[in-house]
Image 1 (cartoon, rainbow, N blue to C red):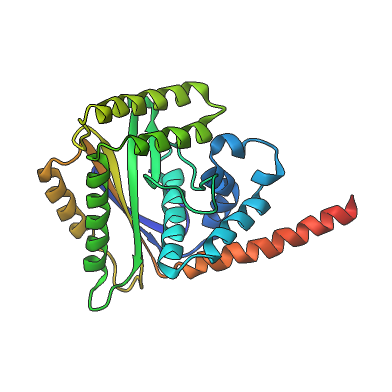
Image 2: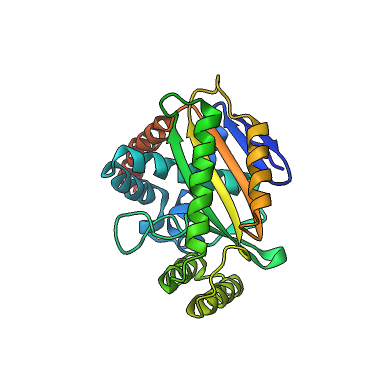
Length: 280
């Protein structure tokens, strides 16, 4: 597994725990290089259009972020952090759903992230729950509550006979993969098979692959213990809810640090943009 400065990782067969001990220059560099792809999808990010450049993507992200309540703000930063972790540490997975909803300035409905594993022609559905330390609870207790909430939401969504959920999934995949025809067709084929099951009232989580992800924003003096994640994985495996599952838990002291970085980036890049225009 890859490594990046400022992040400590414990990785096992069914889970990985990431401790963001420093919001390092390496992490910031990944955000700079990947933000457009994360928000708009990899196809649009490869276009040389101003709408999808780093500065305008920063503006769009912050417009969405600053209009939300604190719980949604934490969720948005948590999703960004999970997507960054996936890019760095799970390169075999291709993200096939953008973070932005193109129809309105909100985050898209449905699964938080869809990931495609080309080697096995598998689609993995990811649910992310993020939060701060809960009153009267330590890091392990809070993270376990987040894990259970993410697991239960995946179970509920994947067992719904709701075809609109899969229409939305296909639309997101088309946006993300417009310029990657082979992958787009493979992903669409998987989702359309699921839609067929849904139309026959045969939806089931038991043949789906999922990633259960959490972000805990809490002091690292009280760390999430990997043994607690292992217990959760063992219990979930015994429940036989999903075909395959993997757990990603990330702990960072505060989400505000990432928000402040994005705000500072706007100021810096605006300044560079103005200098460039004057030189032209």
